[in-house]
Length: 123
Image (cartoon, rainbow, N blue to C red; front, side, top):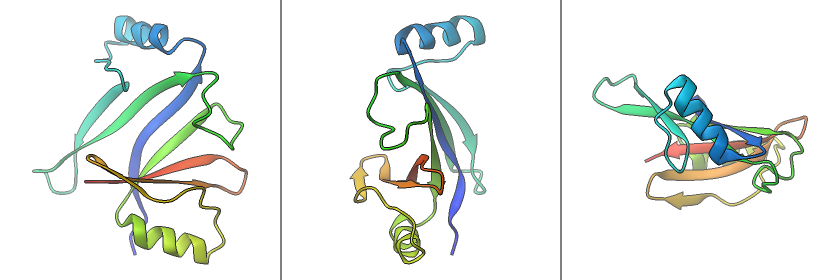
């Protein structure tokens, strides 16, 4: 079974996300939206485009909890339901239920040091 197929996003805490986005836009040319920046690339099938999201979060965000780290990595996965079932059997802490949105399905887990990871199956 395929598990992780790539990095879907890099999220980090900062004191002022709006100023951080503006700094990256001004100095590094990031095409910033409300969600951050999408770095597009081609998948194994060159007709299918994928992307990796870069996104600053407020330093007081609760979104990364229960992790105490200032970052969270989003990993792209192939079959989220099957992977979550396997992870549960392997004793991995699954923090929530799979949520579906128009851009894919998500769930959160903890690694062995308590880092919160986001797993994403793109639509």
